[in-house]
Amino acid sequence: MPGWDLNPQGISHVLKTTGETASNMEKYAKAFGKHLTSAATSAGTVSAEGGGGGEGGEKAAGGLVALALSQYAERASKDLQFVAARAGKSLQGAADATTAYLNGDQEMASEAQRNTLSAPKLDMPGVGKS
Image 1: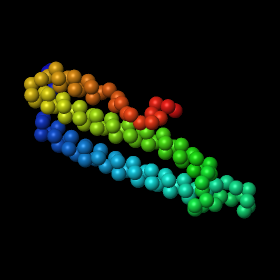
Image 2: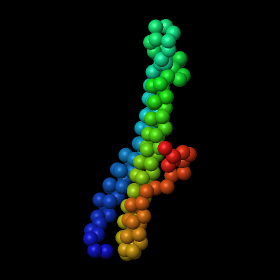
Image 3: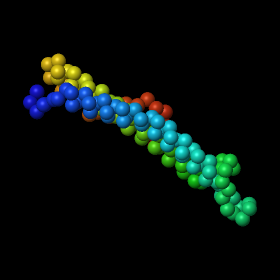
Image 4: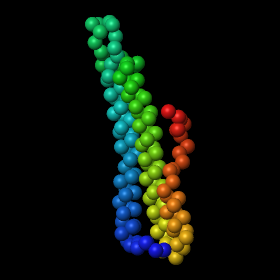
């Protein structure tokens, strides 16, 4: 295919290192959720009792900051899941296109490349609903 100049060893290396980095996304997403939960729990609530100040610790069941963090976390987790799915789809598409090209099937390689460019479809509750 005109315009394609592939180095299979280089592609393999890039796919391997990128895949290893992408696999850490789950670990980072879990840590992100843990830290947001901790922040929401520690944020306290606004109360007229006790001088109107916020109280930290376990009494943070329904404060405004906790609510805001919860809403942010819901949106951010969807975005993180999309990024992870997109990374996986991109990596798989690059591998498929390279394999097809090396097997001499340039049309299949082009199709794999085109398919990789489309957005991943995620089956998650609430996705697409803002």
